[in-house]
Image (cartoon, helix red, strand yellow):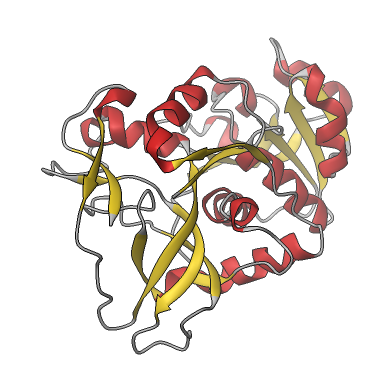
Length: 307
């Protein structure tokens, strides 16, 4: 089968297209014929070597690329799935030699869920990593009051707004002025344009500060300033968590595959609770071009690769 791998770190040009044997599932695993794979910032960090430099991925001769997959089971192994099942899944073991940028991928059955009904594989591929990250971040906060979400127009931020709204939290969203209408459509109650003095502008809407913040835009102390003393703060990248000033509980979300939770999110996509946004579709052979487009910024939704 065809797969995209990294043997040396650098720009998009280091992505290699190789022919490799089709992998077979082990105990408790399934093999998925890949129909679509989303392109995420973590893929760029894998390719550039940033994750290895940060100690997240140990040195390897070959690294696979891609976390998100939508496709069909073609070998169900000893699991409860059946060949032909339409599924989505998340590869969270990122030091393996094959990723979702491939013709087939083997995942633990516990990392796989039925695909949302009535949704194309391309749309479904945009769900696992970003929606699970948003959901698991929300699980880290206990508030039933007001939550600030930075980067609210982004792939993770948009899901966070929709999920927080579904939990009946009061959502204060931060994004570009041009994204206000879309962010409010996700479920934001209040909108604050990104820019300086964020804490002051949020506190003008929520006296004393919000109860919690989900900082998907990695604003750090600027977002922390909008949180009340003793509140909660969730960071979304290694090293991005600010000091816990004013007794604020600061935590970082570390994504993990969770098929049961992913199935819940798929149902939320089916009923329209979660908006599935695709910024563009490219063939797998243009993976380097997809990385260039993502790095350039300005996308709303995910680029998706198809074999």
